[in-house]
Length: 277
Image 1 (cartoon, rainbow, N blue to C red):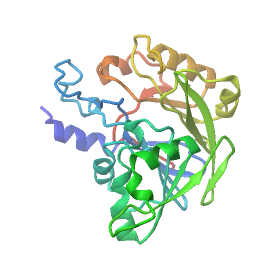
Image 2 (image 1 turned 90 degrees about the horizontal axis):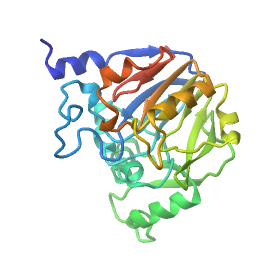
Image 3 (image 1 turned 90 degrees about the vertical axis):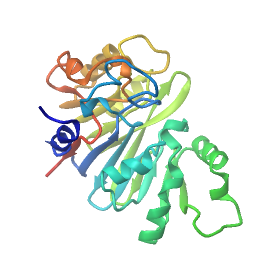
Image 4 (image 1 turned 135 degrees about the vertical axis):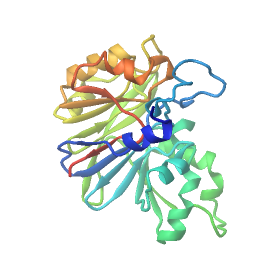
């Protein structure tokens, strides 16, 4: 009988080999919703599962291009995610929106500042920057002291922008009424916290070979795509592979839910790597 840590060791080296265009590797750092899985105090089958694919940190993804190491969102699990994935270098963080499960770990960039002697580039809309300045006011004060996180803010909107040699295309979606940005990088599109996606945004996504999109649960939800809605959206886009993320314990056990999916759609899980090698 496999022990949980042994199962995790086996799963953590599983690598999907796909055409990533400009990207060398994608690592799912976290695939859970705002509370993560297991949820504190919850006794449901998912939260009590020994299958490591059911243990989900807050949603985040690592994108390694030919010249840059980029993280999309630094939630409250950021420190552990970087340690677990052995991320020794970091160039930039791109933010989708300002909710705590996406920004709360910003302070933990400090070791990269100190060890790599570099300032971390932060890409965010003006609204998200205002939230960061409020949440982490000490970072942005005029009087600096030793050990503060060192960041350089870059304002983005809906126009494509570059990080190193790579073009990033923002894709606006709605999280209930809150505008949130997804991102297309080459043939890879990453969308989280979406409920409504306009035709204009869909046109930006079409042609992606790899699509990542949120699929919270099977029950109706005001601000997230449901399981069935995410499947329908994946069909509309027609990517070669679609991975669901931002998953709640309400969706069910990973192994059971995967049986309900067509071959070109899978549940992402923490530690899953997609590589072009």
